[in-house]
Length: 120
Image (cartoon, rainbow, N blue to C red; front, side):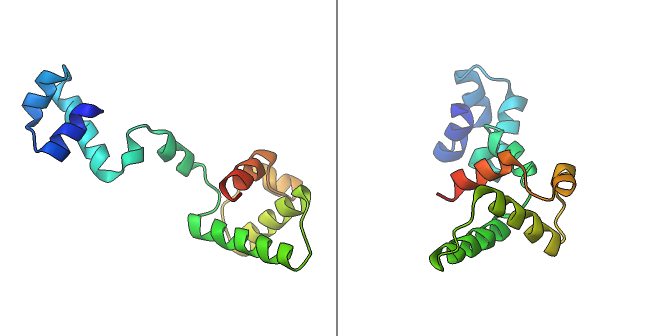
């Protein structure tokens, strides 16, 4: 929201910014608080997606590094093997995983697609 950015970056008063941008002052205050926490929090998508992450950022980087090291040793993994490895990685690290992972013994197809997109 431009009004919140105007308040934070140009030291403008909330009342003046709310009046100029025709925004309720409390709504502007809420957006300012979210903007101070994180730039991504305003859109909401990043915050919602982060809530559905299975692995933390560091754990996922560790898993990606392991998969790359296997690939460097000429043990490239198929999609199914990667999904199985992710499930076993989650078990060893006592990570809460979706119920479908436990039922199937491997990570979900959509998790794999997101993982592949994040670690191209």
